[in-house]
Amino acid sequence: MSSCSAALEVTERVTTIRTAQAGAAFLGILLIALNLRVAFVIVGPVLSDISAEFSWSGSTAGLLTGLPLISFAVFSPVAPGLARRLGLERALWVSLLLLATGILGRSIPVEAAVWTGTVLIGSGIAFLNVLLPSLVKRDLPTRVSQVTGIYTAVQGAVAAAGAAVVVPIANASTYGWRLALGVWAGLALIALAILLPKLRSRNPIAAKVEGHAQGHLRSPWKSALGWQVTLFMGLQSLAFFVMVAWLPGIEHEQGIPAATSGLHTSVFLLVGVLASLAAGAVLHHTSDQRPIALGSSILAFCAYAGLALAPQLTLLWVVVGALGCGSLIVIALSLFSLRAVNHEQAASLSGMAQSVGYAIAAAGPVAFGALHDLSGSWTLPLTATAMLMLVLCVMAVLSGRNRVIS
Image (cartoon, rainbow, N blue to C red; front, top):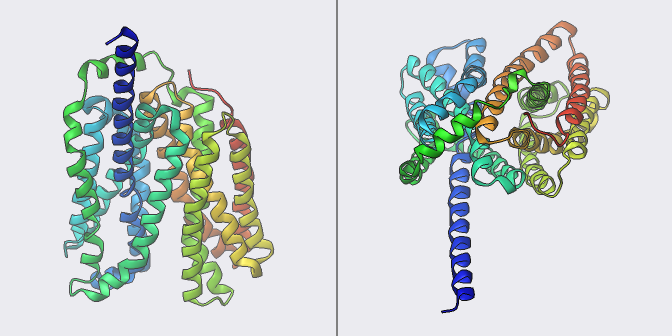
């Protein structure tokens, strides 16, 4: 065999190995993404059943739905440190274990277990939310936006499916809401089993080198760019969660039937899935995120301004909002990797942005409801949210610039 043929054969083998590694990494990312949203989205449709069993007030029931967001804000900053101590694979696996334990614990017919399980679910998802962009940055650095768009669409699609089937499952079983919520632990257990072999592949020498390199990188907490990304994350999250939380109430006062309002919520989620896929594909082919970030932010502004000024066109504004929100989440998650030098800095930026961002997101629906109570109509809260979307436009331009924290 000639030296040229031998070199070609080696090159082909290396290419095959790298392709296989990239495929395995992508599969792992999708398995994790399956679990990122469904566990807390499915509570809403059966919340009345849970409240009735434990004789909860409306505020107590509302706390249960808001607890995951609070957990996201509290636990997100802890995730980068967890990854540095355990390694990225082990940290992701432990996070999935927390999530599976929380889902099963929440289904135990004991009130304390419901609250404890919900906190575990929130902490597990918080860690996964923070660490997954870091995994994408490390294993698929040339396809950050494309992969982020795909996994965001996957988690949205699974969440929409879960919300659609949780009530039929509860109605068909003697265990009611407990089975309907607990069965979703299966997704986490499948991911745990498939990802278990990867725990043995951790390279401690590489981890030490990366940790040493991280010590010379600027903390996102001390960076203007880090705060711009953080505010972008928080305001786009607020846009999504306010819409999901209050759209039924807004439409109820307009005389729209509950069934129609539920259909509109499904449209919002499903159009958001398509927007996420499209945003990921567009971002993959550009190094300047400003146009799509600004365009998506303008769509979010139009949705809230439209609901305030022309409420008779609700479905139009729902679709416009879905296009904006579905794109914005992909952009925000992509920025964690695109604005970082390496995957550890991406984890630090992700932890910061999601901690502060979800604190903003958790406060948003509460403030929105308070403004409605104060004014007696939806015009004031919708207008205030539209104004915040203008701030989001500014953050889109600033955080979308092609630069990194250094």
